[in-house]
Image (tube, rainbow, N blue to C red; front, side, top):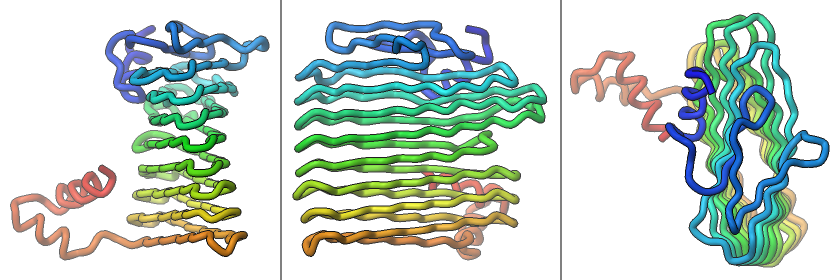
Length: 305
């Protein structure tokens, strides 16, 4: 890997060196490093367009790294990764994609990740997106995450996009069985003329299932964001979605909630708040010695942390 790819790898996966445990590192359309363990097996799909990852029953306190980096202008790829998580597991999956584009052609990575989570298993899924490079070609990321949670399972999703991605459509679909739970925390910032669309489609099919989807975002300059969240309660369950956004300059933000209560004991809630930074917040920080710009950045960093 060259220095640009190594920098991207650090930005999306916090990796300075090859990680311990199971991993697959993909750079410019091909695998540049892969390792399976006794409990986590990584194998390429027969068509070469993705991976099958299988985690044995009872696997606990182990991690899996599957980052992707692109440093070649004009490269476009679609990758399909399937995760088969056994029963009674507790693992962390570190994904993410970084694109450095210094050319005139668009670079694009579309990743489709499907998770089949076994009974009473716990998984934390971290996905970071990052863009860099001074070329006129766009940096495009379109991740799709499909989740099937079996009885008693739990999945926490942390999705982060703070810098450099020109266009993204992020789709998350989840189906929850009895007493399973999905927790989503999205952090997003757009600037310039960037566009970011987040779509969530959650089906609470089992008794006692629970979903909590929260997005915090900042839209600056002439950028556009849309948060589109649908939660369907098809059993006695609890569902909550929330969009909390700061709008600045000439940006635009759209929040579109949809709640479908198909059971008398489905408790569903949606909250949305979009507004500018309060003037008194900036004034208070300026009294402590910060400039107006420094105060603004301090508020944004705290909001997205």
